[in-house]
Each structure stands twice: as structure tokens, then as C-alpha cells.
Amino acid sequence: MNRPAAAAAGAGPAGGAGSAGGAGSAVERYLADIAARLPGPARAQAGILTELRSGLLDATDAHAATGLPPAEAALVAVREFGDPGQVAAGFGAEIATRQARRVAIALLVTGPLVGLLWVATALASHLGIPLAPHWPWAGPAPGLRAAVYLVAVAAGVTAWAALLGIATTGRLTRWRPARPRQAPMAAAVAGFSAVSADGLGLAVLAAQLASAPGQLSPVLAGAAAAASLARMMLARRAARRCLAIRASLT
Amino acid sequence: MRAETLKGHLDGILLAVLEPGACHGYAIMEALRVRSGGQVDLPTGTLYPALHRLERAGLIQASWSVAGGRRRRVYQLTVAGRRALDTERSTWRDFSAAVTALLQPAQPAVNPA
Image 1 (cartoon, chains in turn red, brown):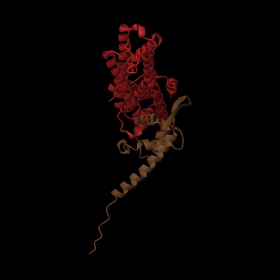
Image 2 (cartoon, each protein chain N blue to C red; image 1 turned 90 degrees about the vertical axis):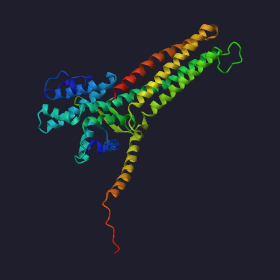
Image 3 (tube, rainbow over the protein chains, first blue to last red; image 1 turned 30 degrees about the horizontal axis):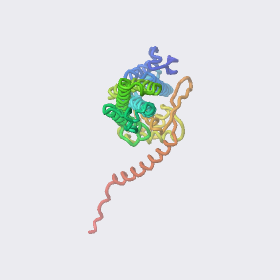
Image 4 (tube, one colour; image 1 turned 45 degrees about the horizontal axis):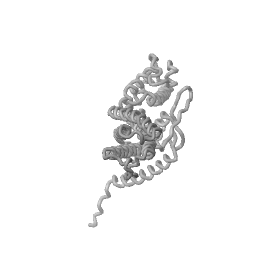
């Protein structure tokens, strides 16, 4: 019996890989095989590998209790676990779905907050479109008006895609056929739409700064711009990750 | 019994196995084997993603427990899971009654001679 303590304790993705021979090595080789095929962040993988390891070691113990030598018991346990590709594929879909759900929720929550900052900025800066078109000094230029409509469209697409991503990954999951590539796509669309909405908002702000900087409320405009910039960067990274994880699904 | 035969029923079966109380992965697999009289013998590894999916759907909840220096993920039914199990049961009863009736050899036609 030379089961390494690290393997039993479950220390990270390749934890306990230092074991040589015996019950540990077949299990650790199998886990390393699965780890190599799992998508997503190491944090998500670590929990899965710990769980699988304890399952494999429980099975190994059960077989050893019937009189099999430990190394053979581990081999039987690994064989019963099945094709590592199949196990990893099952988890891959799950990891992708969970990530997509997190991204979609984050976008849906931050969207209205960032939007409110922009609306507050517009109101405080007397750019109340279309609330005050009759004020000659606040009448929006046609270009500005078009840009604002574009922002609204991008925000709408973000919300729609994020809602789709959330709806198809929660409780409704049971009543829908499993389509693990759909949620990451919805989340990516939501992410890139959010990037467009924030980018357009910033462009409108820049245009306003160039033409009539005096009208702008500096505090609110600064806060809205900072919020949009931060969200743009985070949304872009999240959307790219969703696409990458989607591409890794078989 | 092969995985394809069970397809569509695995969720309900897992919920039923968890009904008496919380279980970790290996115990769930053993319960499947024992309760099916050895008929259900799936690749153990494929159970785990199914459990994670049920967890995401809110039908079971998981927590870590440590025993004998081994960290295990223990699953138990949620209220929604119990409701889903009830639904699964009545659906299965209707379905199996209908299929049993349909698969029965047809009664030989009574010849009125």
C-alpha cells in the first residue's frame, strides 16, 4: 500500500502525481489524462479532479477489500470509470455552461448600473435626449442621436443574449435538450454587444467633449466613462473565454 | 443495461437514489448497482458530470465532507429535486403502463365461427 497522502487529500489538478507504482499511479495517470482534456480555469478543474480521485480511491478500496492486490484493484477501478475522453467531455460541457451562466449574469447585473450612470450623465449635462430637444443648446446633432440609438440597440442585444444564456442554464435545463454550445455562444454575443454598447457610449462622450465640453457634468461623465471602460475590458475577456471554451467542446 | 437504454431516465434514477439521504459519488454508483440487481452498470465516470448538471439545475445540492483523509463531494436532494422526482415517477408510471400494454402479445382473435 503506497497510496500517497497528497492523492488522498486531493491537492490540485495533478496532485499526488509523484507516486510510483501501486494503487496511486493508475489512478493518477487516469486523472492526469482527464485533466489534460478539461477546459476552463484550473480552479474549476481542481474540484472535479478531487471528487473523481476520491471516487476512484473508494472504488479501489472496495476492490482491494475483496482480496485484489492494490495495484490491480486500482486498475479495475479505473476501467470501471470508463473512457477518460467521455468523462472529460461530460465535464467540459458542464464547465462551459457554468462559465457562460456566470458571464451572462454578470452582464445582466452590470448593464443597468452602467446604463443608469450614462442616463444620469446625459440628464445632468442637459443632453436629455429626447426629453429636451427644444432647448437650442441641447438639441442633439443627428449624428449624436443615431449613436445613442445604436447604444440602445447594443444594450438591448446584450440583455437579450444574457437572458437567453441565463434561461437555458438554470432550472429550465431539465426540460431542454442538452446543447452545451448554445449558452457559451449566447454569453459571448452578450459580451461583445456590451463591448459595443460601452464603446459607442464612450464615443458619444468623446464627441460631446470635443464639441461642447462645458455642458458635461464632470463627475458623472467621469464615473460613467470609467464604468464603461472597466466593463468593456472585462466583457471582452469573458466573451473571448466563452468562445474559446465553446471551441474546445467536442 | 447500457447507457443508451437509460438515456432520459438517468436524472430521475439519480434523484431516486438520493431520496433516502445524502450520498457521495461512489456510494451512488454502488446504490445504482445494488438497487438494479446488477442490471445498471454504467461507466462510473459518466455519473459525475450528470450529478453536476443536476446540481446546476437546482435539483440536488453538493457539499464537501472529509472522512479518513479523503475529501468527498456529498449530494442531497433539494425541495425542487423532490418535486422533480415525484413528477418523474408519475411520468414513468404512465409511460411504462402504456408501453407494457402495447408490447403485450395481441390476444388471438376470437373466431365467432
